[in-house]
Image (tube, rainbow, N blue to C red):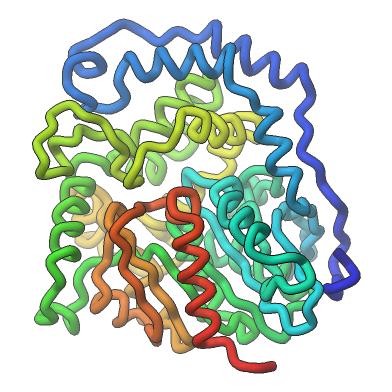
Length: 431
């Protein structure tokens, strides 16, 4: 690793290996946890009111007696895993975990890819695998860094004695990139909360040269109000409207009762599983015009992830206590005492409208003057049209897709990789 990067940070190799007793405790807790009674809402409403009983019962059985976390560990350990000590401006030191790939090319482009909630670095395993299949370390065009955000996975928690914002997370990730010798310039890519963090980095730090997003949450800006939309954009926005109306209660819970929901979901792995899966799960009738009543799918994804993919992510969250440590961005997103200033009337409107407030992307303070790319996926929860996204920065590259949703790196890793590569070929000039 050190043969082709110039580290100034203290780093150590990290190998994922969970103690057997921790895995046994998790299996025991899953077996002992009760599902609760059958109800109309969880058994006969077609998923309209959340996760169904049959799915939870199947997941419980699989998690307790069939799911193999060690297979996930083995796949993760196929890639370099590093923990780096990042010193913040106030002298505090944070251990930040990242997984990635490093090139031996001197002209390799440093690229950071940032996850969101309820995601993790696991989302990008397919993305990294596609890179490994396409390139060797000798001809890989990039150094790819996929960090765990502070509070997520194997990264340290934010401090408990003061507030922590996405600006703080962005600062640490920027220091991580510079500390690995990439102060000459790097690219950043993000979806979900990672898109906010990535935009902050591009707007704030000179060495962050270009920005690629697959999430650009915002409402229609005045300057794009009269711009005609493509038919596929209108159709996607109709789905998004249903999601806002029926699928965003979790946002207010995260933002306004952050401590409470943290205790609740730390008390039972089944509670965490239900909550993790619940915001994704809706009746197909609500979101699709095909009329196949009761047929399930995930609104955040185009195709339902496998049971083991879901259990892998929830297991990571449980073993690392990620949920209570990593839910902090929602306070900032809904009722923000640090990012901007809201009038009392605006605060009341936010609560009345179900917290439909989007930060950073439409904020003029975070307009990205640097080259920006945007990948549009049809089952994104907030599928912002190209014309809207173009008002938030110097949009020089755009592509729409026919498949894929909110977790683009997980669902469509090859497509996202193609997008990022094409974008970088267009905007990254010779050093």
